[in-house]
Every structure is written in structure tokens, then in C-alpha cells.
Image (cartoon, rainbow, N blue to C red; front, top):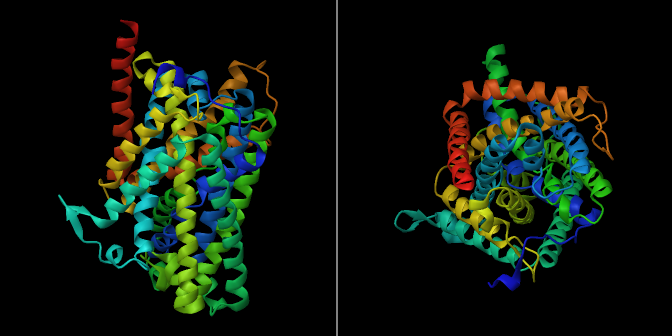
Length: 455
């Protein structure tokens, strides 16, 4: 691509519908159809699990309120990278950008696509068998890598086409989920007693166990709410960011919270805590229990569509962060390039595709989810803290939208996040400490790049 075909400016294409769809599509993916089984195995109590999903929704809502204030005040591409840079300086912004590249987008895309391969195994025999193809690369991993690059191709071909694709997928999956919830209770072969029935594993737990498992489970839940800040990353591409950004964040997060709670009730209504414990394919199990094989296949198809939408939206939003740090660091300026023809930050999207490929081959879905959930809880907490700090440091900053319930909204978010982080370290030390290792490595890379920039 020649210089005349490149620019450093993103196009203002995105309105409220597309921005809200981006939030919804970012959030609803593999997690909601896989995480409940892990929670049922650890806790065995539907009431606690519903509570965790509600807390997750409240956290996402509080985060969305805080980001609405920050994004309306600083409507630039990059989301929390911009907020952290303005609050804490370039070092922490860069560290956050690396966390976004790894835990924020590449790893979740990998988890979504690996889970999609499992669900597609219900229709494609070779994916069900999952044989190794070459050099130890499994069929599931090969599929996930292929779809990663298909998504990169779609979203480097043009912003309008990519957003159109994302809008259609999002609309269909929202309608599909609503129909699943309605049909489950109207026509499904479920049992209302299972909605609240406690499995035997709960009786063996101490209060310390319940606290530890609840915190660990909340990390999984937080992963499922990943994307509540989706439209903040494309703020500079919104037609009216001061209005569209807050509305899209709050509408999208509220809608997804309601859908998540409804789906969890459906899962337990269908199969109960004991039958779901430890299962990855919760959607498949619930669908088959409710509607038999034919109805189960319909739900599996919906799950796959949700995963497509999630991978698509995360591919869009992630690239905007690397675009932003490419503008700030001369050695990385290649990532700030934008196609003048399509409006896509194509080098940033290619970078994300490479890192996603590495995550696909690096671990199991539950390990990737835990690493992502911990890292993003830490990162989002730092960003949400910007609301408080900037209110003190820069009281005269124009704020077209102010966080409702301030200061209790950010304080609640930070308090619950801290509790989750502490227990996550105790419950999953390897994955949690991997996040800290990423922070340290990112800090070292920052100083190397800074020296090159100053040279």
C-alpha cells in the first residue's frame, strides 16, 4: 500500500445503533454459554450464581457510567488507553495497551474461537474428533486460527462493510436469545424445581471456600461482561461522541445484563446445577434437555452466531488501541496507519491477528478466560479510578456527561474488583501471576521504546 493510499485519520461513520450493537456484540460470546458450568462445579448453588451474574452486571453498569464520563470528555480512539494516559502518564497507558493486546482482545478472541470449534463439532465430524493435523496442531486450533484471519480480512476491507456485518449478526443473535428464553419457558421440557435446587457439592463448602470460589467465579463472570466499554474504543469514529458514547454504553450493558440473567435461569431450568457442573458446552446440554436434539441444534447454531459476533466486534475495537499507541510512540507508528480508502487501521488489525494466533495454541479455554478476567479486572479498575483522580486534578475539564451516583459508583466498582483480584490470586495463582508478568514485561518494553524515541 502506497503513502497516497494511507492516512492517520479514522472516519466518522458510527451512529448510536451501531455503537450499541458493538457493545452488545463484544459482550455476548462464548463466555455466557460456557462459564456457568465452571461455577456450578465450584459452588453448586444457583442462588449464589445468579447473584454473581447480577453483581457482574452492576459492575459493568458502574464501569459503563464511569467510561461514559471519561469518553464524553475525551472522545478519542483507544478507550481506556487515552484515559490512563491522561491520568497516570504514558508508562501506565502503554502497559494497559499491552494488556489490551493480550488479555483484552487477542486472548478473548482465541477463547471464543476455540469454544466455537467445540460447538461446531455437533455438526462437523472432524471438529468433533479433533485430530492433530500437522506439527501437533489440533483441528480445533487450526479452525480458530483460520477464522481469526477471516475476521481480520473482513475488518481491514472497510469500516462500513465491517460495521454492517457486525450489526446484522448482533441483531439476529439478540432476537435469537430472546426467543430461546421465551420458548424455554413456554415449550421447553424443564423443571422449575431445578432453578433453585442446590447440588451436594455446596454442602461440603466452608464459608472460606464459598468466598474463594465466588471470587474466582466472578472472574469468569467478569470475562463474560467483557465488552461493556466496546464503543469507547471507537469514540473518534462516532458521529456525535458526547451523546452517542454514553447512551451506547448504558443501553448495551443494561440489555446484556438482562439477557445473561435470563439465560442462566434457562440453563438451570433445563438441567440443574448438578448436571451442569464442570461442563463446557452448557448451551448444548440445556438446549437438548429442553427441546431434544433438533431444538438443541437450533440453540447450538445461536451460540455459534453469538461467538461470530463477539469475535467480529473485538476485532474491530482492539485495533483502535494499537492505533492510539502507534500515534504516541514513533517506533510503533506503523500501527497508526489507516487505509485512506477503507478507513481501517489495517496494521493494528494484523498485529492483533498474530497475537490471537499465539493465544490459540497456548492453552485451554478456562485458562485463557481466567487470565483475561483477572487482567481486565485489574486494568479496568485503574481506568475507572481515573474518574476520581481527574475530578480532583482537573475539575475544570469539560464533562458533557457526569457519572451517576458519583463517588459511590466508582468506589463500588473498585471495592468489588479488589476483592475479586485478591481471591483470584489465591484461587488461580498461575493465571493471575501471568497477568502481573505481562505488566512487568510491558513496562520493560516501554522503556526500550522510550529510549529509541528519545534517541
